[in-house]
Amino acid sequence: MQSRRQSRRLWRRTPKQDRARDTIEVILHATAQILDQKGAAALNTNAIAERAGISVGTLYEYFPDKEAVLVALARRQLARDRAIMLDVISAPGGGSFPERVRRAIRVLIGLHAENESVRKVTMATHLAHGLWDEHAEPVRAVADLLAQVEGALPRNVPLSQTSIFVLTRAVVGVVRAAMREQPELLRAKELEDELVNLVEGFLEAGLGRNKRSKARR
Image (cartoon, rainbow, N blue to C red; front, top):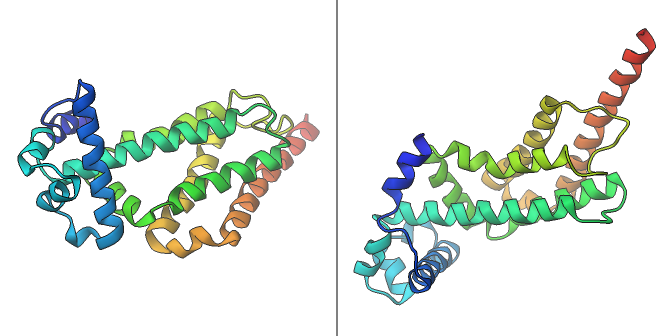
C-alpha cells in the first residue's frame, strides 16, 4: 500500500507515447552521467535538464523533483537486475550446480560493481521512500525460481522455502553491503570465493542435518 502511495507522488505524468518514454530515458541517462562524473552533490533538476538537453519545465512534466528521478532510475536498475539474474538461473545447460552458483554470484557482483556510485545513491533514495517491497522483489523472484528450475539446487539437500529465503538474502545482503561500505570488494575475486563458500557451507550443513534425520528414523 505504501509503495502505491509513493508511486503516485513520484510521477507527475505516466509516459504513454514513445516520445514521452524517450524523454524519460534521456532524463535518466543524464542523471546517471552526473552521478557518475560529478557525484550526488552536483545533482539538481537544472543540472539534469541541462545535461539532457531539455528545459527544466519539460523535466517537471514527468518528475516533481530530483528524488523522483533517482527513484525511477533505481526502479530501472532493479528491473534489469531481476531480468539478468532470472536468465542466468534458468539458462539451459547451465552446467553443474557449483558452476551455476559461481556464475550467478559473479553476475550479481558484476551488476553491483557496474556504476556502483550511481547505484549507491539511487538505491538509498529508493529505500528512503519506503519502497521496501520493490527493493526486495528481484531477490524474491530469484528465490521463487530457484525452487522451480531443474538443477538450480542440489537434489540431495532438501531446502525449505525458509532455507532458500535465508540463503538468497544472505548472498544479496553481503553484495549490497559491499557496495555501500567497501565497493573495492566488488572487484576482488576473494568476495566471489567467499560467497561461493558461504553457499556451499550452507548446503553442506543442510545435507548433514538430512543424514542425521534419516539415521534417527
